[in-house]
Image 1: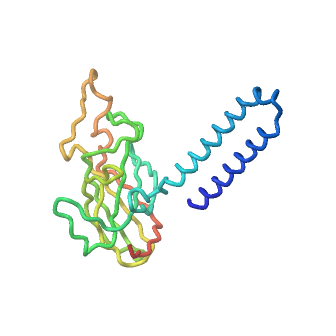
Image 2: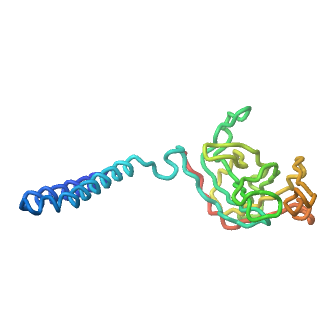
Amino acid sequence: MKKKLISTLFSVAAVSAMLITGCGSSNSAQTQSSSAPASSAAASTEAVAATATSDAGAAAPGEAAGFTENPIFEDAKVDFMNVSAVYFQPVPMAPGQEDISKFNMHLECDVHALKNDLGYGVGDWIPYLTIDYDIKGSDGKTAASGTFMEMSASDGPHYGANINLPKADTYSVTFTFHSPAENGYLIHSDKETGPGGVLEDHFKNGNLTYTYKGWDYTPQEW
C-alpha cells in the first residue's frame, strides 16, 4: 500500500509541475482562456491525491475484522438455501463458551436464502435451522461431528462451532439441515398473507443434506 501511495504522489507532483510550466509559458491572451482547463486539471490532481490517500488507508479483506476466513466450499445450492463453509482460528463465545484450549479451529456454515416461496428475502440469513455436521477422513471414519450453534460475529449472524481437527487429510464434509419448524418457526399458510409455500413442502422427504468431498486440510498455527 505504501509503494502505491508514493508512486501516486510522484505522479501528482509531475502533473502539477507540467501545469505550472504550461501556465508560465502562455501569453496574456491565452491566460484567460486557459484558466478554466488549468483549474479543472488542478482539481483532478487533488482528486487523484485524495484517492491515493483513501486507498492507502483502506484495509485489505480480513484486515478490518482481524481474521481471515479459509473457504471449504462456496455457494452450494440446497433447495431454497445458498450454503458456504469456512474455517478460521477458534474463538471464545459468550455466554459460557470462552474456553478454546481444546479446539484448533472455528467451523462456520453460512446459510442465505435463494429465491423461494417461504417469505425469505433473497440473500437473507435463515434463522431457526438445526444443522448437524459430520467430517470424515480419507479412511471413511468420522473425525469430528456435532451440531452447529447460532451466533453472531463482526460480519453478521451464522451457524458455527469450535472443533478439533488435528490431522492433515483430505476430508468430506456433510451438513444436515433440519426444518426451522422443529424450532417453532411458522409460515403464514393463508392465501391473503402467506408467501405461497410452507416448510413442509421443502422437508416432506425429511432433512436436507449436502456433502462436499475433497477438502484438503492442513492444521495451522494461528
